[in-house]
Each structure stands twice: as C-alpha cells, then as structure tokens.
Length: 165
Image 1: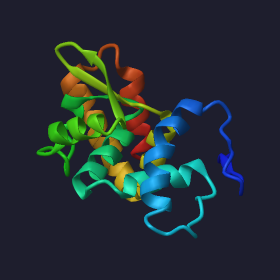
Image 2: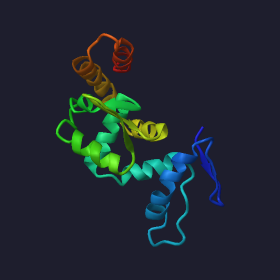
Image 3: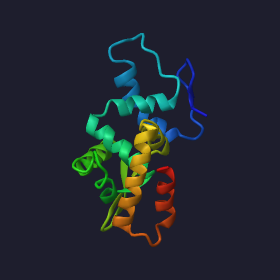
Image 4: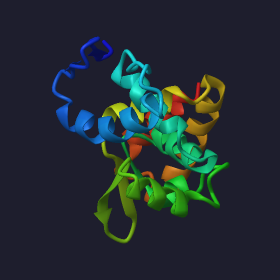
C-alpha cells in the first residue's frame, strides 16, 4: 500500500520516518515549490521518490535503475558489467552516494553498495521497462557468476535467471 500524504502535509509513513526525513527537504522544496506558492504535495511517498529520481541526470538514473535490477545491495563490479552503464558505473555510483541514494555496505576487495532505502530501490526498479528488466536479469545472473562465482550464490543467480523469463 502506498504511503499517503494528507492535505495538511502529514505523512502516514508506516515506519519510514528516516526515508521521509532524507527525502522531504530536498524534494518538497526543489520540486513542489519551485517559486510556485500554489504548488501541491504529491499524493504518495513513491511519487516523491520518483520525482527525485527524475531530477537525476540520464546517466545517474540509468545507474540507479540498473542497480535496482541487481537488488537492494549490489557489487560495483557486477553493475559495471551491465550494458548501458559499464563505462559510467563507478562515477554514477559515487555521484548517487554523494546524493545519499546509495551507501557503501562493504569496503572489501569487492565494493558493495546498497540503496539507502528499500523504497527508493523499488521505485527505481518499477521505472525499468519489463522487457528491459528481463534482459538485465539475464545479464545480472551472468555477471554474478563471473564476479562472485556460482558457489554460495546459487539462490541469487537462480532468482535472476527466473526473472529473466
């Protein structure tokens, strides 16, 4: 069920207070009230998130959407093997981390990032056409096998193969 924003501006966040705290200042001020005092708040938190994603550059939005296909957390090396973001993955992830959409999860030999909020990942994922998602899931499965190996990652690889149709 989507989160609702009442006409008075209060939010039924169902426990996503941190998400709202991060999103509302930038999105509401920059998007909802850009010099227009009569502007109204979007109806749902998902709409606010989509507005924030729409403000990203094309490359950043593409990186966010490709990462969303991988999952809530993702290895940079896996993302960098996906067509469409191979050359922009590192810079895109760094830019999105600075914008606080991603956070560094693991700083080991393989950098692992995650969406700061699961709902942001869900909205980014929903923005990928179904036909493109299927192709990306197939490529993600192959990239996971290459980068992480099959052993111990069978469930994750299997999930992406299943999603590829």
